[in-house]
Amino acid sequence: MSGNAVERRGTPPHFLADPLLTDLYELTMAASYHAHGMNGRATFDLFIRDLPPTRSFLIAAGLGPALDFLETFRFSSDAIDYLRSLDLFREEFLGYLSGLRFGGDVWAVPEGDLVFPAEPLVRVTAPLVEAQLVETYLLATLNFQTMVASKAARLAIACGGRPFVDFSPRRDHGPEAALGAARAAYIGGAASTSNVLAGMRFGIPVAGTMAHSYVMAHEDEEAAFRAFARDFPERSTLLIDTYDTERGARRAARVAGELAAEGISVSGVRIDSGDLGALARSVRAILDEAGLARMKIFLSGDLDEHRIAELVRDGVPADAFGVGTQLGTSADAPYLGGVYKLVSDERGPKMKTSTAKVTLPGLKQVYRVEAGGRIAYDEIALEIEGERPGRPVLRKVLERGCRVGPPEPLAAARDRARGAIASLPDALRTLDAPAPPYAVRLSPGLAALRERLAAQLVGAPASHLG
Image (cartoon, rainbow, N blue to C red; front, top):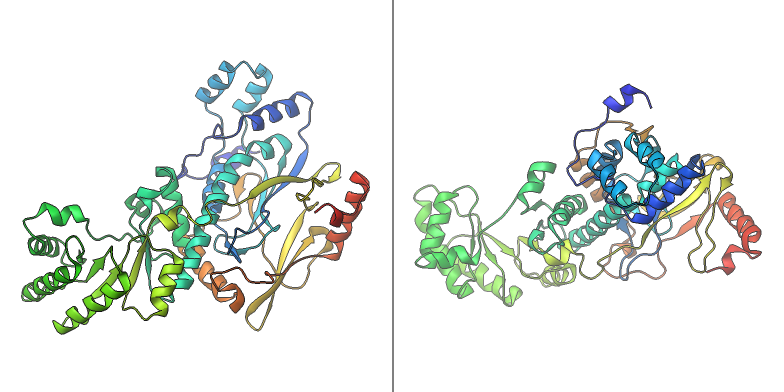
């Protein structure tokens, strides 16, 4: 790579981006490749084998941080010293790692677009050692953020146009996960996040109310409400369920009426416990009776897409929702089976034939075919087949280790996700997996290559391998 290309590399990543954040076998394989002069161009596909239960689609996320990692990929002197201390690696290999930068090409599904099983989410072409060493980081980043963005998209469907806020950081699996969850949730449809660092780093709107401790720290509820509304006259949502929700609503109404004379408008109230549907109705009646029809009701408390869909379906007067644990951990489907497999090298297409884990060989593109403004089916085709019907989904995002264009604003990925969700057939916009699932087809050329390689490798058609 030229010196100019290195100089163009991106700003420091927003996430931890250390090449040592990898599985040991990535390094031992790379060392063996290096020792045997095996460093020709190779292509790996990162894809999701199967959808989790109840899922009918996924929303791609995590590409931005992944590209940051690839653009700034380098082993520090401390990292090299640590690897040396393991007494596993030859000095020649450690010297090679000291000067290593990622110089490959990457094609990827843009963040916010739809993803279905077996389709390449990311395609990496690079010298074999480089392509191997980035596997763990790419999988960790794309699996997690795609998982959360997909959960957020389901929440957006359930909310039916009402906003929801990411309240998950305190329940996420560590601070780094909380940043990734906030970013991915915003792509998937969250209106804002309570995570202030995510707001600073990614430009996501931040939102919050108050905690029960704030109310309890004051002499009484009204004193707490009055103080908070005066301190934050533009953004005061009062938490009314610390003691008794209906009494809290009446006290909030009295404070709102009192402060209106001072030019302060209380934005709304939040209910975080109890029978949310029944309480929202009674609180709405209390506020309306007090002449506060514009005060909004915000519901939170162990909500997920199914509970929200039920509240919306029952006509509960809720204006917005806060979702925490269920969003940031994707509690009902807390992992994706994303994998990273070699599909081609200098000797030609590669294919894994393990039972139930057969992979698709060769360099591929995904084409998405629409009918009547809705997606109809996807086709995975070999790149050498040329253009196929439909829209090509994979875009070239990295060339010789550098971004093809400037980093995409997160809002653009969010808008793309909104459009992608709108393009889903009605059967896929439900919260239960449809039968049959969305059709993902193989092109004639890819199907033929798969069968031919399977016959060569194991003497059986690929369809017999599961």
